Image (cartoon, rainbow, N blue to C red; front, side, top):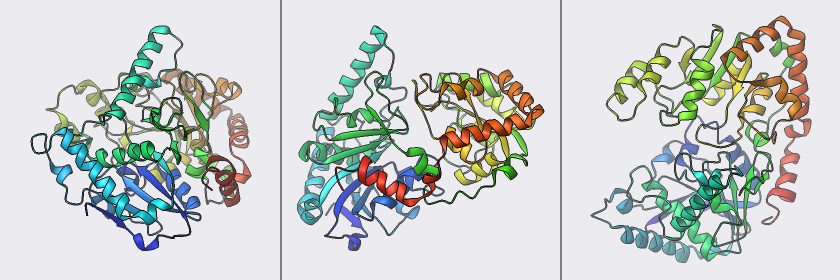
Length: 461
């Protein structure tokens, strides 16, 4: 067989079965900031469903990073014939035939699983391209045409097995899970397909009922209801699942607010090929004068945690093309810059800080929300807001935005100075934010069970 199911012994014939599609980075420890909500969701669903996880990695190496015995894991391409092949050894058509044969082999051999198959859940299964135009929300006719062209191209690539390049090394591991997902949609259109969209540059059109070529039983869950342009996003409790699930609200916020060590913190990346993110760096951080600030980033623009120094990283990428060396040097010379931290350590530092800054996702070219606004409040920090974030007030009411919006580093410095001189107003604003965005029920298990059963996944319960 060219596939294997790990932990198959936990399969329960009395439960329905869900396939879960994830990027393999989800399973690495410490768990990435974007993914805790996924496993908290699975923790709720596992009580009623068999859960089989597929990641973007074709091999088994990722199992060394994360093994949870509550779930099954499906691996294709055990002999790595596909993963190791080049264009000459395995032409494109042969690759597709090989993938489809492997999928059919799995379905035929494990009929018990497919008799119980009810649906799929996905999160960030693939990022098709940087700054994808299908996420355009403008009403400008030229941009609408550009968006429609991008969407149509996207669908044609799905139909012709070319959503990704099967010969590109970085995308090759996505071949099996992505082809398996689209195979299920095409051949099991009456099942249900859910997508957690925490990044609008990911492949969400595949889960849009007006775009998907195979099934209408698809839903996209986002931070808020977003019906702008060709978006049909439904609000979901992503923030609550990320930080509040299975936790007790035990923070003493009076103590936290009265014991701040830092004035400002930002944690994020500045990829060299994202112009608007580079602009954010120069607009907010390069000339920030507050010396009691911390900027957590990596000079190479990657999200993985590294032990390399900035100098080592600069040397390691020096020979690559299209590298913004000025940005590297400016980051290296910025005394506020410190290396990235894992999720929990960063939140501990965030808790010691008066302010942070919320920017849109760095790969989302158009309006894109994220976890950080409510996450910051939960950990006792007031989030300032970039003026381009949440432009239509879908996540944050205008009342708060008027108090929190900044446009440059000078605005940040002024906000810090004002609230340090008027600290009671700082505390008042924090508790206004907390009481509006964070509710007591978010810390009760029954809240999540009821939301899943009666709202988000009611079709499969």
